[in-house]
Image (cartoon, rainbow, N blue to C red; front, side):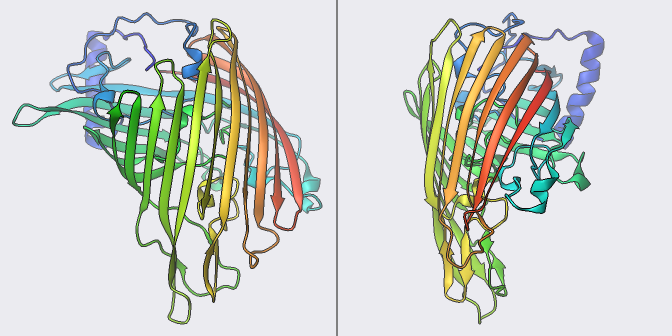
Length: 448
């Protein structure tokens, strides 16, 4: 876990934070990491990133992996303040990020590089060309509350609540509406709430400026209940019940709707070395169902996904690099692959003969390199595809992929700026293709 310096709290500041802390305790969830007494942190903050640590934690990867049980224990709880009169500590984190985007071709989503929104060759949109977009929608703020609860027999359990918000709605009509990213609580090894899906591994995602982070990847956020524990040594595991995600194509306009009868059953096993390298195996099993009048097939099919994701950390210079790779296969799971889910037909198709699911796959590889303590680059590529049913329209997306290259400068540990070039393509069932490219410049200020 990264270490941060302890902020000194003045008497006036304490009173102000007490009021804010009590308000947050009454109105908001957050994330935590503690089970025993939390002590004062004496770590000295660095203006730049220390040698030997970069590969294990990409500084652009702001997505925190949920922890449970003893893994929540961090006696320093960096950047936290006490809520006096309680055994609760509070940390406020997040960042402000301004993005300046130039599209060289038509992309339907001006804010993130959505491969499914690339205009196809020969369409009117293709002739429109690209636009320039400035926005700060990715900026976010999170509230992290941590404590310890004790049973009557004296046993102690870590307690954590985490809530995070941003403003990243794609629709212009909700351009600056607040969006709930995470809202979950942890007690001991049990997590309940909305956070990242279990089968994916955030530690393996390339550090990109583009918000989509590689549009052909698998996963997302879901409301869930999860048990997460250690298997022994470097191994951990998790089992979860998650909200199901499916998209059923209805090409013949049958009456009815997609109505999943039970949740997604998710699991993962992860090996992690002390130096930061890791490999995770994940699995999802969930229903895809159609319910309608008696004249329409009422049927349920079992969908699944199998994933493997890895981060390999190794020294190239004093500043460690990382190779990131992963992939997966499944049946009916394409609704959780953003590029394939763009047109809402990803999981399969229902007809008078029943429900038929689409097999799908994804693969990605990236490399994160530090030129020196202040200069970082990531190169990544990601691809995905699906085998569509015969009854699905020729205009349904069936394959997509892209390449990202960036250069990031960190003049200070909490300030970064950089530029990224990206190229992407999409292909429909009938073979029609479209390609697009984009340049994105950003300035980012972190406050945690």
